[in-house]
Length: 330
Ligand code: C5P
Image (cartoon, rainbow, N blue to C red):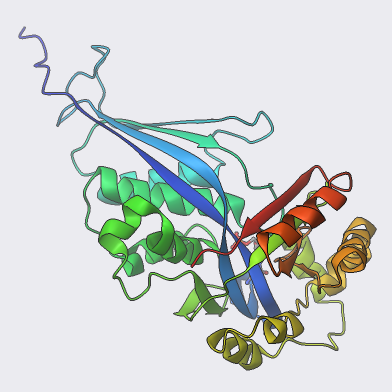
């Protein structure tokens, strides 16, 4: 019998930044089919990011032998992270992203997709950390396999995996250096967007330029729990989304601050008093309005300068272990 032919090994590595997001305002307008809620919100990318390393190690076409001499007939996905409390298996959105691309565009390819995540973004925190890792892997697969997918097509894939993922894809197209070099001119590449529907109908808008103080109380908040909880609440104060968009266009940061309203606070603040404590502490310290991001528990405020953000960070350092002096991307 003829031994399997070792086809030319094909190996590539890349690094991607998976940035966090904050919600400058968030409204819930009702329930949709499929258990989702209809939202209207403004999403803004920030500089705080996870670092993703991706390798594609091809075994050759048609199930040829891989670098270890083992036969491989399919695409094998391996995921590792620097955090013991983050599952690195099929349940991780980053793994699901690689699997979705492999199933959709794998074709005759065989080999290993190797992903490593260095976690910086607090988890289950309202900052889309997991969604952003997922978006980065979709971008990474697009580049490693030279698929030529545009931002809209990547967003279609992202929508299958989660509501925040399309925004992360659009924002990474605008900010990650490697992505930007070939997707930066895509009309959907943006740092800021209005999100409607379940959060996946996105309209790019001019974003916010500001230093940010961000802090995450050490409670894990389930998005599902918060959305279910908000159904039982009477919403009295809603954000003026048009007002926020105008304020952003005018680059009027004090008006932006005034328009920062998140209706999900109504549930999360009652359920998790530590979030109220955190909000009050920030507001007492710096006199800026503090707002919860997404379903929480992270809270942020705009700062006039890097020095101010650093001062608040120093002053409140003992409050939460995960506190950051960061900025928006633009
Ligand atoms: O889309 P994603 O998987 O991130 O959503 C997690 C959960 O949050 C959903 O299963 C749903 O319960 C809730 N959700 C919602 N309405 C949205 C987004 C999320 O009810 N627009």
